[in-house]
Image 1 (cartoon, rainbow, N blue to C red):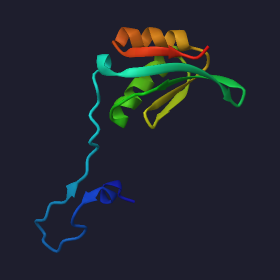
Image 2: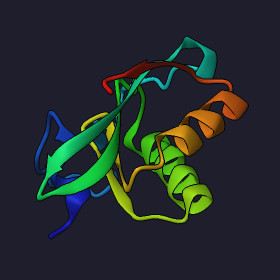
Image 3: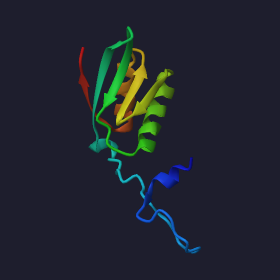
Image 4: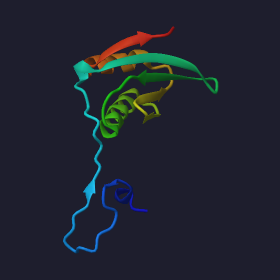
Length: 112
């Protein structure tokens, strides 16, 4: 299925061969790293495994994925990013905080 078809704005079909569809774009503006207020915490409730969760990211999903990839690559672990939240596998909170600090992000350490 064509994903662009779902984001059409206004007219769904036109018989005019020169008609250009208008698409809804991701309107979320990504804040600069120094404007972000991230919360970094450890979660031990994920099937008995430890994970580091970074909450509070404000921006597009592409930028969230880029930050997630940077963190996962530099920590040499797996993880996921969705809904403004990054989940990194393992107890690597100190590494994550070091990376966020180097990149210029504002963060707050939360939890044990």
